[in-house]
Amino acid sequence: MSEKLIVSWDEYNKTVEKLAIQIHESGYKPTLLVGIMRGGAPMIDVLSRVFKLKCAYLAVESYSGKGIEDEQGDIVFSREMSSIAKSMGGNILLCDDLSDTGITLNKSVDWLKKYEPIKDKIKDIKTATLWKKKKSTFEPDYCAVRLPDNPWIVQPFEIYEEIRIEEIKKKHSK
Image 1 (tube, rainbow, N blue to C red):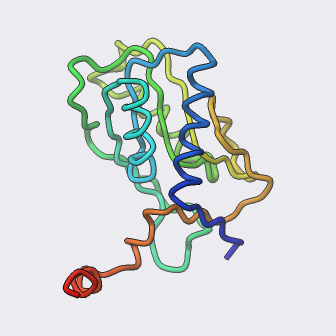
Image 2: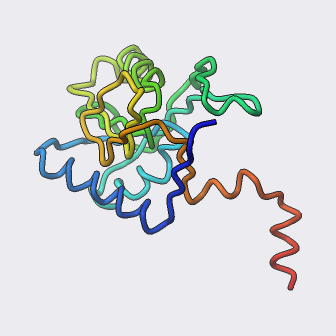
Image 3: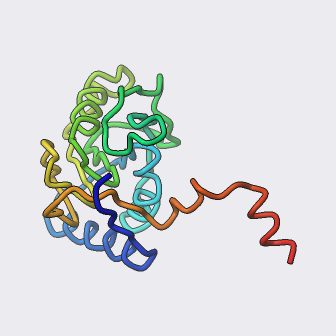
């Protein structure tokens, strides 16, 4: 496995803020944020509060199996996109935590363009990521950090992937 980049909550929040500044200073005015789940969830929560925008969530799964963290698996999309926005479309900002190989972002842009409920209502789609790995073939419109290599990024909320509910209960029963 490659080297790890361990990100604290403070670093994570600063990276999201850096991305928000880039988007704002570019003059692009998104009307809807679309987060690629799960990695895009925490960042679009913050961006939606900063920009006062509704969110939509696109469930995409591409990594599977133990011990294959460095490999891209088959990409599976949800049947529908989830949102409470009254009208979806307009200027879409598609967000994911990172551009690893670039495949997920490329395929997600294509999926959005073909998504029947909004395909005729889209003015523009731009993309935003917190990190772009060196090996990525996708060039996001906005990127907070362009990495000089390809580390495995450990985000602050990922500790819950290793913790079982029994451990949490034990910690809180003291």
